[in-house]
Image (cartoon, rainbow, N blue to C red; front, side, top):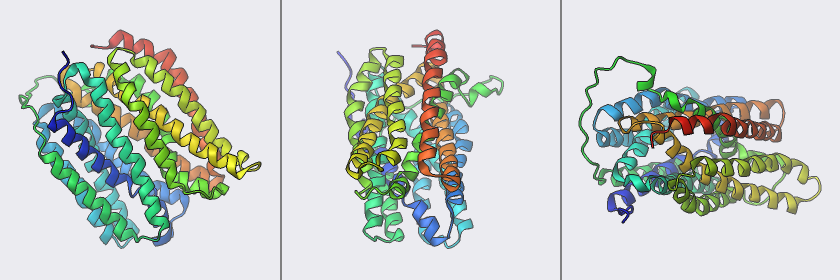
Amino acid sequence: MKEKLFTPGYLLLLTANFLLYFGFWLTMPVLPFYLSEAFRAGASLVGVVLSCYTVAALCIRPFSGYLLDTFARKPLYLLAFFVFTSFFMGYILAGTLTLFIILRIGQGVSFGMVSVAGNTVVIDIMPSERRGEGLGYYGLSNNIGMALGPMLGLFMHEAGVSYTLIFGSSLCCCLVGAVCAGFVKVPRKAIVKSCEPVSLDRFFLVKGVPAGISLLLLSIPYGMTTNYVAMYAKQIGITAGTGFFFTFMALGMAASRVFAGKIVDRGKITEVITTGLYLIIFSFFLLAACVYIMESSLWLCTVAFFLVALLLGIGFGILFPAYNTLFVNLAPNSKRGTATSTYLTSWDVGIGIGLLLGGYVADVSTFDKAYLIGACLTVVSTVYFVRRVTPHYKRNKFR
């Protein structure tokens, strides 16, 4: 008989994680407009400012995994959660672009810690035989937050809501999430006193590098989409509410997460990832083609635009729990934090590149060219995963 998955602690952690990501992503599609209006920043500068957050998160992620594998996890998780939340107050008070950049860097550092800690803690409190399913629902909580947050943020912006109120809403959401996290009971773990020499593998899962490269290539176009898709829609003339793009993404993720995790638990990890990759390839090529579809029909272009959102949601909803489980399976139990850190680091490197690349290409050309580049990268990722990552994983997995 399978152990119970939906314990009170697990449900509280899902809620905390959803509110963390919802609060953060509420501001993401609004920030390009805020930076251009408040500080007169161009697209390239917007990309640089937004990517500072990702770079900062990357700097702390490898050390986060090491700290979580060495010390008590819950105190580190709660500290990072509250620090992350406090930076939204700084956004409200920031009066110069320099100060805003400093705040973005600080929040990026705290996010790098809290996201790794949350992913590690949830593995600690769930039954191991239901890890794929449990990670699927946990990932669904942050992905729905990542989808609904931008949707509401765009609706608030289009309705004329002030940036102060939008940042304040994020602050309140994350504060409630931090309180929920405080009630989660985490099993005690022995303090690790390792006499092993300092090596790269203590901060980064070396066996996860091939999978990390494949994931990085996928996250580049994802970063472009979550941050610039509203500007792309405006550029090509789509008049429907672009906030619904994230609604359809959320629906796709919710539909796929439920069954994808269960299939992963049956050992079909690489097969699940490959299926998701094919969907994502098609989706990004269709997104890049929307500018040409618009030349023949606004209605058809609008349908294609929202179809892309649904398919991307399904594709990434399939991929996230499978990739997360793949990284965890490549590490011993004593290095769960390091495995999770490597997984998230790979993702964030691509997001950062996507922010920079999307802004740069939009400045020198158009957003559809950026998405075409992203679509080509998904093809490279798929070929690399099938030929390199899959055999490497089957040779080196622990479970």
